[in-house]
Length: 345
Image (cartoon, rainbow, N blue to C red; front, top):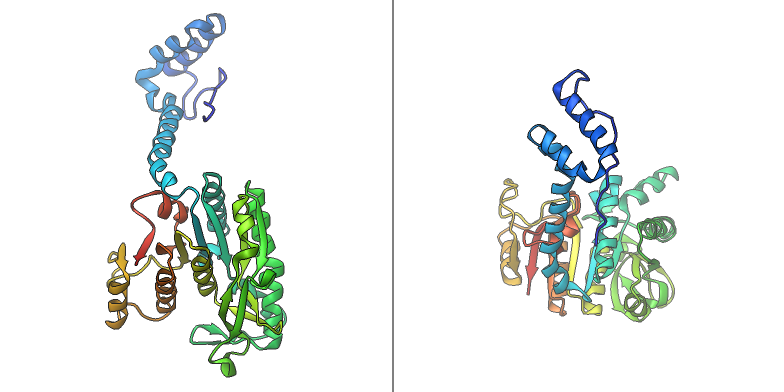
């Protein structure tokens, strides 16, 4: 139960009210009456002021009713997903903006508190670029993938595992969650293999296998795993792994109910020139057709392929959502409207 707001009686006038006005006299008289006749406070204030300040007097009451209504409407969604595993890939604009970051952290903690089993996977491209710049190393990309030589890989590991991961863990814990920070290297959670383009990309890896043994007890005990997208091959060589790919493979290995990718776009658009043409829901066959027709292109293709692969491996639904929206995770999970495009099997 939410505690009601209790407002002490005071002689302070509402903002914008002149001391000589009839409203000011009524306000003061009502407060004086309350001081000597406390049993009549509700009647005296309401009867003398209702016609003038009904919106002000009832503001908190209306707000409380709205909150209760929202909570009651969320109940079916909470019941649907309670006890289910949801893998969230965090990145893009939601990682660059402090306000959006706070929104995502709050969403994750709330969802965890009502019984959803959240697994939080992250990259950290902007932070990596920042530290490469400090060390006078120029970032280099090929087809959207970071070219990662030995020195760059060292920075990637330090930034993702040692800095970004621990910052996220601290923020989640501060917000009331119980987060545990890991990378794909820990417990052989993710085993990497070189990318087919290793000669050009360097230490950019694909995922050879997933062993979720290390995170199952964490999830079962209501902890929130926060996983940096760095993995190692059987020799111990570290690789930079695409965070979308890492999230998708983890979702499949965990038998997740849902995979959510936070992005910097509204979702999949029927027409990229028309932001109003958002595709709310589509199946594998439909999204493959959109790729063939060129409606899904560029950086959206690997995200869609990641979703399709996860669905093929047993994940129930996947969503590509707009991480630029505040509380996009709550919109996606706890409403019918959603916050992007849901892809189904």
